[in-house]
Every structure is written in structure tokens, then in C-alpha cells.
Image 1 (tube, rainbow, N blue to C red):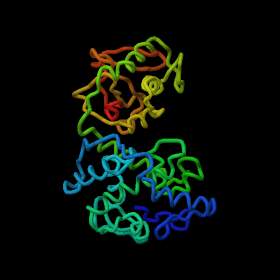
Image 2 (image 1 turned 45 degrees about the vertical axis):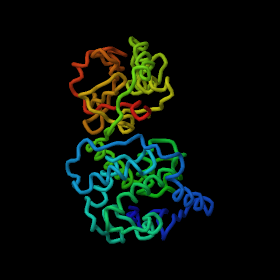
Image 3 (image 1 turned 180 degrees about the vertical axis):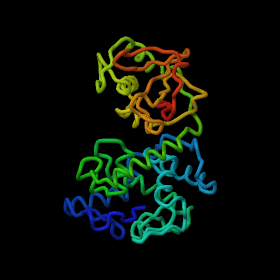
Length: 331
């Protein structure tokens, strides 16, 4: 992890056991060090889990259980088994003996100084030590940029790649092409692996009832891309509003709603589940459309400008690429 890809080209670097930021002065430096050390303990240990990996193809069998366990015990919702696996794939190709010209080591590509602080006294070349340390370190980085608006996973990965100082300075993802490609590549790989709840995915009808009732109350309203209601909607703002009605916060856009998960099997679909399709402007890896299963074989979605908010038979949803159950982690 933190393998100094940016060298001297940028104003953020990792040194020894801490973070030095050449912007913002000593106070920013102190705040970041405190957050990186205390991060996993801020905000509790709820990781929306436990989760498992849906598609483990390409992940070495000897590391699969270790990755799942490390992610589920990392201490923050941003780190899921699929995302951690994708990051390890990006960093080393799951090679525990990997090393880089700048000194990064092992399956998680820790720099010596970062490992000294976050390695827990383990062996950086031993995946049993390095993988859990990577998950914990990700959570520490996530905590250091938690106050910045945006997707938690995107901010975490960007801060890992470019440093928390860069994310704080730009109040979001830095404009660096390398960093943005790093984030995009890992999130796409994580979607390929897929997160699923390992257990406890059943949601009661009482819990999801108000969400379904909200969706039914919106049928017939118009579709306007970018609208957030209450008289017009687009697909993602509609389902976001439905869950917000019971105090559950979903991200605003479809791809981030999918990343928020947790994913479940489409073979056991339940009312309140979100169905994702490529839509007219998305892909299998980055779906552009979302609707909600409301029971009785029906789906409600803000379908498009020609149709508005409609009810359709689930049999018409032939291109579903993922299903999530937002309430599953709350039960």
C-alpha cells in the first residue's frame, strides 16, 4: 500500500511513519496523523456485513477467506471484500513477493514507513499479516477524508493513491489522471467480483413497507433527468427518495447506489430490492438505470421522458446485472 507512485511530481508524499503534506502547514499535518492512527476507531465497527464475494474467479483460493475476513473486520463500511480484493489485484496481482522500484513490498505494496506504523508488528511479506493490515489502513485513510463530500469508496481510494492531503485540498477527487484511473479501475474490478451478504439478508415486510408505499405513490409522475422531486424524478433520485423517507441514505447516482450495496442474489428477490440495468447510457460494469421491485412480480422505476414513473412486470427486466438490498445491513 502507499507505494509512492507519485514520487516528487506532486506535493503529497508518505514519509516514515506519518504523512507529510506540503500544503496546509503543521496543523493539517497533525490532524492527518491523528486521523490515520485513530481512523478505524472513529464511527464504530459496522461494516454493513458480514459480506462475501459473489464471483471469486481470479482470486487465489488460499487468500479468499483471508480477504473476506479482513474486509468484514476492517472497521468501516467503505472496505468490502470485493473492493479489497480488487485493490490487491491492482497493487500486486495477488503476488505476496511483489516489490517495486520505489520500495513497496508484498501483496498489498506497503512502503516501509507505512508498514512500520500500520503493519501491527507483522511480516509484510506474509499475506496473513499484510491483507488485514491493508484493510485497516484503508479504513484509516477513509476516516481522514470523511468530512469531504462524495462517495466514501472513491474518496478512500483517491486518498490512498494521492494522499489525504490531495483529497482535502481539492474537496473531492483530485484532478490527477493517475488517481482517477486508479479509482475507476478498482471500482470496476470490485463490481466484477461483487459483494453479497453472507447471512441475514431477509428484510421484514414492516420495515420495507413504507419504501414500497412511497414508490407506488409516485406512479404517473414525470421523468426529468437530474430532477430530485417531488413532482418529477429521474431513476436514481426516485429510489433515493423512497429510502430517505424511512431515514436510510442512499447515494445520489446509480453507480454509487450499486457500490453501496449490499448485493444479493436475483433468484431470491424481495420487495425493496433495487434492480440495476445498463440502461441507455451505462454498461454492465457501470449500470445507468435502476428500479425497485415492489412485490407481486412488479417493478417501479422512473423509466424515461416518454414514460415517467411506471409499473412494469419483472419479466420485462431482462438485462438486470445486479440486485441490491439496502435494508439488509440494517436488520
